[in-house]
Length: 115
Length: 109
Image (cartoon, one colour):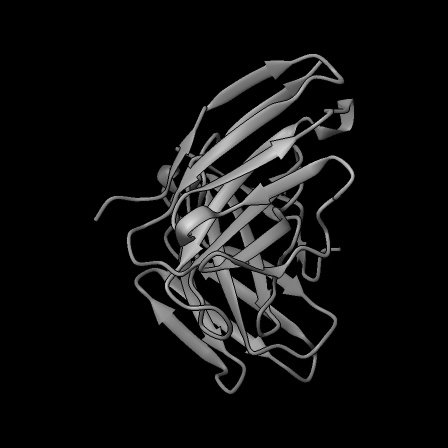
């Protein structure tokens, strides 16, 4: 079974530039998550999709971050414009179910450096 | 905001010793999960314990849950150098799962 795929693995941009990350979840997984992990901290949920609908985006900075999951499969996360404090690893995860007992499977992440 | 808090923040032991990590949380949960993260990689699920369970085992892992104290512990027995990683507890609140800041475990060969 293929895992969660993310690209790119690394990205370096200057502040105020735009950047996009891509995620392909495990086939058949209805729920997809984007997390931000700042160095030395645990993952912080940015947005959760159930199929192509948003379940929770309460911690997504909507003035600069956006995400979509067209057709309920792949997803993209965009930052526009980026700030220095956006430097972090962006993790995508998927799970078969939402709610209780939702074991999440993570991709390797995209490490973003904003200069 | 993060729900769980791991303790200690960092732990260094010799190979063969046991490692114990603790997690405290604030609100009622459906279940609690532990994940491992190797440097530069994504998180890997280790074990899930439901709110009505008190103890669970998986290989060299033993997890306990005390809902009255809102705390959990992860014990890794007979540690190996390959166990070197960060360990996170994650509290499942229903449609929302929150991760702690993690414990960084170093196992010296």
